[in-house]
Length: 288
Image 1: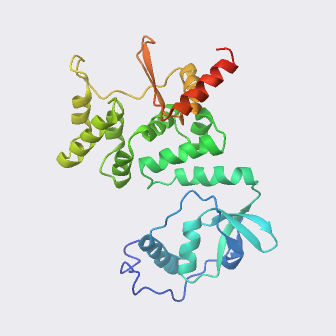
Image 2: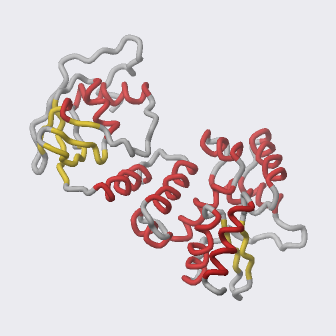
C-alpha cells in the first residue's frame, strides 16, 4: 500500500480529486451517499481524522474495495449497519456513491450487529472490548455464553475482559493508552485493594516492568513459583451460571477463582449499598 501512495496525506493540504469509482460488485448496490444516514447507536463515537484522510487517499487510488452494509429505512433512505468509517472516508475522497450490501435488519438487531462488528476490529484496546462486551450483555440481553458465541471467543476470555471493568479509572486509561497490557491487568486484578493496584500500575509504567515480573510481585510469598505460564482453562458451566445470575446485580463486577479440586473463592465488588439491597431483595423474593 505504501508503494501505491507516494506520500501520507496531511489534513492541512490534502484535497480529493478524480476519485476512482469501481464497477458495482456482485450482490451489492450502488447507493448515493446523500441517501445514507449513520446509526445513532454506533458504538464507535470517535474517528481519527488523520487515519480517515489516509483511508480516503487509498480510496481515491484504489476505490472502495470493501462494501459497507446498510439497511433500508424507506425509499432512497438507508442507515449504516457496519462501515461508517469507510463511508466517511469515501465522502472525503469525493465519491458520491458507494457499493453496499442491503440487509433486512430489525431495530433490536441493529445495536447487536454494530457492537459485534465493532468488537471484531483488530485495533481495539482491551478496555474498548470490555465496554463492548458489557453493552452487549446489558443492552442486548445476552448471557456470557451467548456473547462468546457471537464474538467467537471462549467464555473464559469474555469473563476476563469483563473483569477489567473492576479496575480503577486511572488503570483503565493506562490500558487504553497502551501503557499496560492485558497480562498486566490480569495480574493487577489479583490484588485486593485499589490503592495497591494504582501504586503497582504506576510502578509498572515508570519501570517498564514485564508481565512475568508483576506476577512475581503479586504472588503470595508462601506460594510456589510457577514453572511455566499457566494455560487458560474453562470453568465448569455451573460457575458461569453463578457469575451471570449474581453478576447482573453488581454490574458484572464479580469473579471466581477455582483450583482443580473444586476449591475456590467468589469475589464481588459492590459499588454501593443499593446494589447489595437489590441483591438481598432478589434473594428474599425467591426464598433463598
